[in-house]
Length: 374
Image (cartoon, rainbow, N blue to C red; front, side):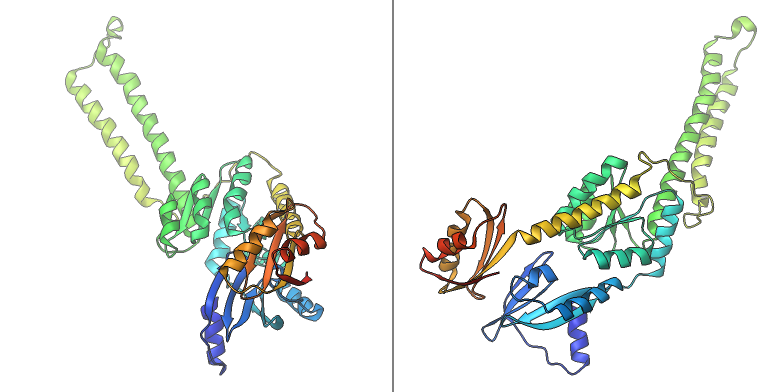
């Protein structure tokens, strides 16, 4: 995304400047210093820790989200600069792959960190059964664990953040063009980096298992008849087996098994004609997955409302940050505090409601001045 934004700016005559003290906050955004002033970019929840987003801009962002675009907000010197909309292009083969998976009776779920509106729009375009939005990078593994309650799961991913989920799933499938960490964590790697290889891999797996079952049948068929006959069980009935015919029968058994195994070379893994649907452990999976998505959104909203941002004057260095952080986290209601002397802010995450006066007192007892609490 950064490359796309930079390329667009250069193509439209905008200069690109170097920044310092760059920091990336996974699932939220990024910050940096430009000319000794704070520059911040990220999603709506993150940016509102630093600046109030105008209602008009929020409405424009919502319209972009409805069309499957993710709005990224930017501010400089605690003033909103605007928003940039980014979107992934859905490849045609991906839509076909999802359709083929659904025809197999496989439920498809999209896990994404995008907001609910954007995720729903993308989910509708791609044709997935359910969408679970607002998933932080470290939460994907937990979502996979929840989905395993409904049956076997396969996770398709390509990034570092997908590695824990790929390991947790019953089958982890990595995109060949993805990161080394994801590839190492996966059970299957799609070398062509095409999503259509997912249903192809399932067809190959089904064909292999079917072939194994057929080979076991013929092996047992030959041995069930041949071994008692060779052991003389049927001599009272006048039935015997000449050793020469016994050797020929064993050779014929091996020939049948090997020939049947070679039939896998004729399997058309990209042909959906003979796909069969799978049986589901829970027929209401789609509705339950949708409910999980709603719960996820509600949970994320609650988490967002349980944060406060303090504007603090007097912090000059990392030691000041540590002092303020320790003072705030000493309060029983505070789960954690992210303090920055560059931006003059402290973002506190709360496990229960706390009075602003208590937060202010904790900081000012350390000889720093709180100018505002958002």
